[in-house]
Length: 386
Image (cartoon, rainbow, N blue to C red; front, side):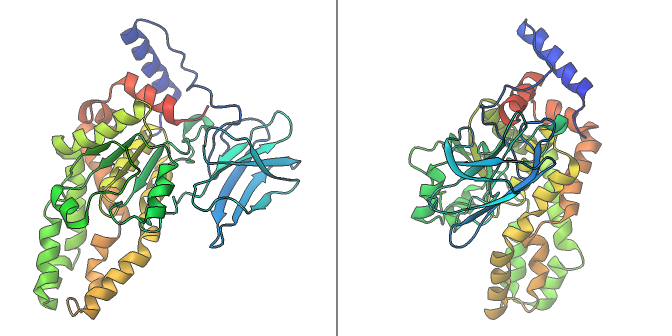
């Protein structure tokens, strides 16, 4: 459910009464003069705004920046490793695209597309963090929220486990200015796959969320080497049903809700947060859905972000399946698909459980996650552009 003007007014009034002061409903704090933006929507709303921006990077480190402009004219493109501050001009054009080369490939780059005159520009960046050993590492910025605002880049990051990062990957993370790393993995997962490799001094919060009995089911199936037993355990929708039950637990289990709420509070406190589980798709996927819904991002976009894990993890997953077959562990490794990939039904199950248990997502925030109106307003002010 998208946040409406009346709801924002209610939030503001509640906050004002609680704080003993007044709160303007109008919006979050203004961004820097150069603004913040997204891949696909203007960050600084206005007549004739630049929209539809995207940035891709090729194997040679060359960036291709594209955008749509209803009133074509001279355009300046700036690059920066800080999504809040742009000073490096990398090109000018009267067109709607620009190729940029010569940027340090070890760093993450953001691009500010600024038109001449008092018109809105946009910030964009590749969504992937470009980590060689964590293909599902992504920036949650750039998505359009309510009232034409967007989620800021460079503030909140979702990823798979970071225990196998290369030195170059760790150095790249070091440029993000992280304040907190939140790890949803259990002790068993961490023991088996290693602690996250992070820039020196990054505070870590271990927020374990168990996977129900998924690990036991998977181990029993694969360990049996028996196609019939594997079909009994994973086939005919059983694996997907097990995942759906895990997603119900995200909503029902008070301990799990508390872990998700911790990340929301850190974000509301102004911290740059990176959070992960093992594959970065289930626990991390639900955490991302919570963040985006709270910020007023529409359901279709929330779902698209959730399902994007299937593309980012595809190469790794298919290699895993090929390895299982080559080792003689599974004749039909496609039985693993519901465990290796995400399905729309998983996210739908969690939201249906929210509706069943709380009646609305707003009530889930208040009663399930104990996020009060003041914290929600701070979160929106922190993570949304004006």
